[in-house]
Amino acid sequence: MDYVDRLTALRVDNDISQKTIAEVLGCQQSAISKFETRKTKYSIEDLIKLCEYYQISADYVLGLSKDMPDPNERKG
Image 1 (cartoon, helix red, strand yellow):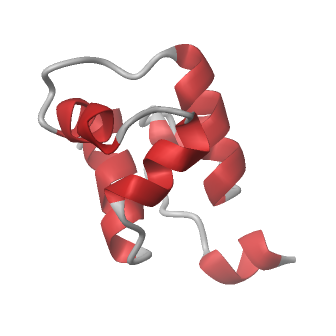
Image 2: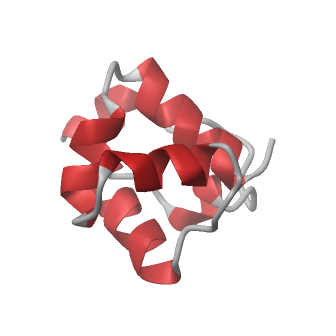
Protein backbone atom coordinates (compact mmCIF):
# COMPACT_ATOMS: atom_id res chain seq x y z
CA MET A 1 0.00 0.00 0.00
CA ASP A 2 1.51 3.33 -1.04
CA TYR A 3 0.62 6.90 -0.12
CA VAL A 4 -2.09 7.19 -2.79
CA ASP A 5 -3.76 4.02 -1.51
CA ARG A 6 -3.54 5.26 2.07
CA LEU A 7 -5.01 8.67 1.29
CA THR A 8 -7.80 7.13 -0.75
CA ALA A 9 -8.55 4.62 2.01
CA LEU A 10 -8.66 7.40 4.61
CA ARG A 11 -11.15 9.30 2.50
CA VAL A 12 -13.36 6.29 1.78
CA ASP A 13 -13.18 4.83 5.31
CA ASN A 14 -14.27 8.18 6.74
CA ASP A 15 -17.11 8.58 4.20
CA ILE A 16 -15.61 11.79 2.84
CA SER A 17 -16.38 12.81 -0.73
CA GLN A 18 -13.81 13.77 -3.32
CA LYS A 19 -15.55 17.15 -3.42
CA THR A 20 -14.84 17.71 0.29
CA ILE A 21 -11.17 16.83 -0.16
CA ALA A 22 -11.02 19.15 -3.17
CA GLU A 23 -12.32 21.96 -0.96
CA VAL A 24 -9.63 21.18 1.63
CA LEU A 25 -6.94 21.36 -1.04
CA GLY A 26 -8.47 24.28 -2.92
CA CYS A 27 -8.89 22.45 -6.20
CA GLN A 28 -11.59 20.82 -8.32
CA GLN A 29 -13.08 17.38 -7.62
CA SER A 30 -11.64 16.22 -10.94
CA ALA A 31 -8.13 16.83 -9.56
CA ILE A 32 -8.83 14.44 -6.68
CA SER A 33 -10.01 11.84 -9.16
CA LYS A 34 -6.76 12.27 -11.10
CA PHE A 35 -4.74 11.86 -7.89
CA GLU A 36 -6.59 8.69 -6.94
CA THR A 37 -6.29 7.19 -10.42
CA ARG A 38 -2.58 8.11 -10.51
CA LYS A 39 -2.88 10.41 -13.51
CA THR A 40 -1.17 13.12 -11.46
CA LYS A 41 0.69 13.29 -8.14
CA TYR A 42 -0.09 15.06 -4.90
CA SER A 43 2.23 17.94 -4.08
CA ILE A 44 4.07 18.09 -0.77
CA GLU A 45 1.79 20.98 0.21
CA ASP A 46 -1.26 18.80 -0.51
CA LEU A 47 0.15 15.98 1.61
CA ILE A 48 0.72 18.37 4.51
CA LYS A 49 -2.84 19.74 4.23
CA LEU A 50 -4.28 16.22 4.18
CA CYS A 51 -2.23 15.12 7.19
CA GLU A 52 -3.51 18.16 9.06
CA TYR A 53 -7.09 17.52 7.90
CA TYR A 54 -7.05 13.86 8.96
CA GLN A 55 -4.89 14.65 12.01
CA ILE A 56 -2.40 11.94 11.16
CA SER A 57 1.32 11.68 10.79
CA ALA A 58 2.99 11.94 7.41
CA ASP A 59 4.91 8.82 8.48
CA TYR A 60 1.71 6.79 8.16
CA VAL A 61 0.73 8.34 4.82
CA LEU A 62 4.20 7.78 3.37
CA GLY A 63 4.43 4.20 4.61
CA LEU A 64 7.16 4.81 7.18
CA SER A 65 4.75 3.56 9.83
CA LYS A 66 2.49 0.64 8.93
CA ASP A 67 0.15 1.14 11.86
CA MET A 68 -3.17 2.72 11.02
CA PRO A 69 -3.73 5.63 13.39
CA ASP A 70 -6.36 5.08 16.07
CA PRO A 71 -9.28 7.43 15.28
CA ASN A 72 -9.96 7.89 19.01
CA GLU A 73 -6.45 9.21 19.58
CA ARG A 74 -6.83 11.79 16.78
CA LYS A 75 -9.92 13.33 18.34
CA GLY A 76 -8.19 14.23 21.59
